[in-house]
Image (cartoon, rainbow, N blue to C red; front, side):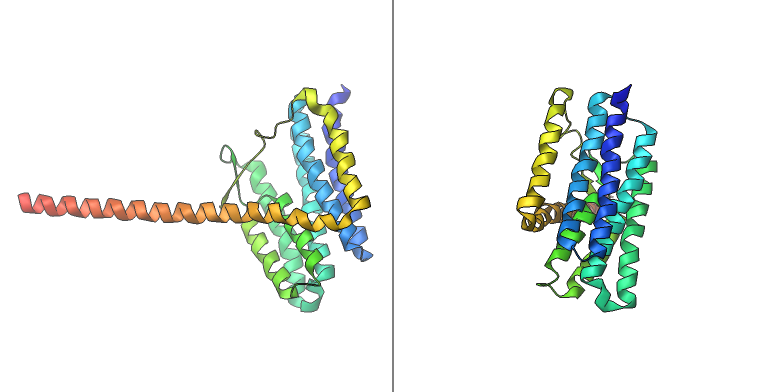
Length: 247
């Protein structure tokens, strides 16, 4: 049945876009390279939704998706960042460029073997991290290179952290009857890079908000947990004192 191969086309498209982004970054065309990473995010988001809509999910597709993600959202963004900013840091630049895709690969491996938490991802998803890093690299002329390097290291650790991030898979499920919208979405995305390549920079804002939202929720959770433990300890101490008095 030909429908079972349709999601694989998008997954391979994701991989192809990541490889082309690497080539373009090598030739200093970082704006187009960054946009192709964003476009790869679109392909990555569509393949799973199309597979679920057509009821053709498979382990093969899952593994192919992870391998593609390592290239498109791990290696490609790290190389874009190295070309634009990390090259000024010698050894530290090499380490940051290597650390990012390594942490991304660990994040994907953990995702594949973990049952996870319903409605949440554990650790920042690699597409979001890669999207932030490659678009942040476009601001290399306005920012200190150290800011991009530190951000890369922070994103690397967020990917392998235990911070919970919301999953929008069910919210944005693609009904089978709306599959015809897919080529329109792709055409619209391609039109942006052709007619307004500078718009790529604005893609960073929602991705950064997503990364910070997870941090905020985690900090809030820690604070609430500490307050509950403190309240429980106080209640336990009060109960102990009352017992001693009554005794």
